[in-house]
Amino acid sequence: MDGRRTLSLIAQESGDRRPSKIGNTIASIDDGSSSEVSGADGLTDTGLPRRRSGRVNALRFLPDNMLVLVFSYITPLDLIHCTHVCQRWHTLISRHNYLWRRLFLRPECSSGQIGAVHVRRLDAFLHAIATRFSTSLSYIDLPIELITVEVLRELAIRCPNLQYLTLDFSSAMQLHDFSDLSEFPCNLKRLCICLSEVIFLEGFMRRIYGFLSSIRTLHIFGTLEKSSLTSTAAPEETDDYETINISKIKTHAPNLHTINLYGVSFIDDSHIEAIASGCIHLQCLALNFCVRVKGKSFKNLMNRCRKLTCLLLQNTGIQDEPMLAVNWSTTQLSELDISSTDLSEATLLEFFTVAPKLTYLAVPFCDGFTDTVLNLLLDRGKLNSCRALDISNTVNLNVDAVHRLLTSFTNISYRIEALSYTGHVDITEQFWINAIRFLHHIKILVIGTAHSWFKQATRRIHVDQILEACAVHCPHLKRLEIQWDPETLRFGDNSSKFIDHLRIRCTNLSSFVLSDGPYYEGAKANFERAERHCIVRTTTMYQTSIVSNLNFYDELKFN
Image 1 (cartoon, rainbow, N blue to C red):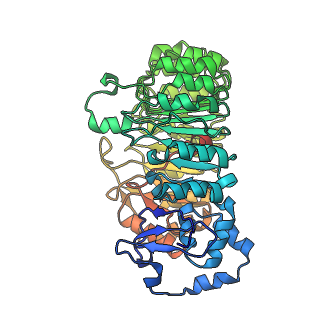
Image 2 (cartoon, rainbow, N blue to C red; image 1 turned 120 degrees about the vertical axis):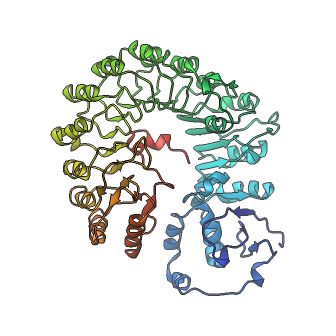
Image 3 (tube, rainbow, N blue to C red; image 1 turned 45 degrees about the vertical axis):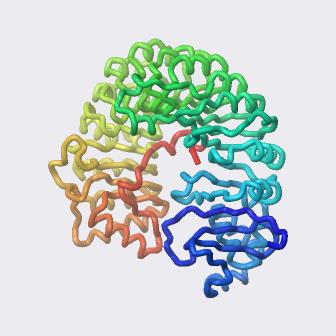
């Protein structure tokens, strides 16, 4: 290669099956014009037919600054592909380091539009950190094979602006030797660690504790999902090893304001107690799927962390008595998720009586959330400032109570930006036609009943008028999901007219989710004819949530 150093980056498989994408891509990162494409048959670019595209040729008239601006919007994987187009593009991408602000190296990132790449040669990757990424790199995620002393040292020395780091140990069976690790990025704002079931990380963490003082957001992802696939025992009955020391991380990161512990099976109230003792700046605590958390530490948590406003407790083991022991009236809590918890109606009544006004409330699969609880919230004005509400699959909540909320309390429905109400077979299209008239600021709307949820719907739903109501009354709508199955949905011969109205009037609509069937195919074809691709999706591949309305959504986002 004439002494040139190259970085071998193998593009992960994508859905595109065009001949030009066959094989693995190896992108040169130096300022030369040489590049190679080596596929399974060993072909190089000199053996491939040359075809010029009229669209690509037209781009040669764009000035360099315009091309660089276009490049700034595409993924690292696409940047690598662009280096093979021509020498000019190769040079522009190589010389403008800020194009490489985010780098995704984990295979799991290959789905969606993230565009993950795979490092083939470690020495070339280290050279790329120093020459191509350097001061521009702000985000990088590292799979286990790249979590080495050499890589972490280069990131610490060459990338002073690195703020977001993901360390993925989830597939690790053995760690590298970190006895010589003495340098680690010290300006991090966000650290994400994906745990392994069998690897204890204390030896590695002991080397980096001193560099964590600047961290404001901490993500720790557990192995609960993997364990549930292989174990038939209840999560509380399994032996879970504490593979990382939460208390020591808290001690060395005193400025934490967001902590997300997702599916960490060994987390219990003693760990929450440790967090409460040292994180006085904590504003958001997410404990979703930490099934051992019972709530016994919440009293000290809310007393010590006075700035805490967001508490996410989906699928935790919180109990009635510990929840009632907290003086919620003195807290600043405004966002709460108690999905799939076993809190009783009496507990929720007493809790919501003293709790502050909420801007975000999620109670799906919460059997204790009843008509009485909802009426209490309405009568005491606890939802007057609510922007996001998820009351899906609440079997003890009557449809009439929800209809009253949406149509009679217009000061609430007018403010709501995200609403999810699914899993009730008694709802008709007239319910939503009446309710949608009051949802003027709605951005996310999830309605319908998924197939075979407890019992199938006894009546068919005419979807055309629901879409017309959305088109007329919801100009800010961004995401719409209709969960009724094809057997339940019915539509007229001119249904395309109503889809047109939705597409034309809801210009911000970026996601329209339907059950796979004839109506889905018609809606998808309608949007694609208007050059709006990837808008219509199926419920089997996509699920709409209201979590984007959390104030800390950007901090809680992973990847």
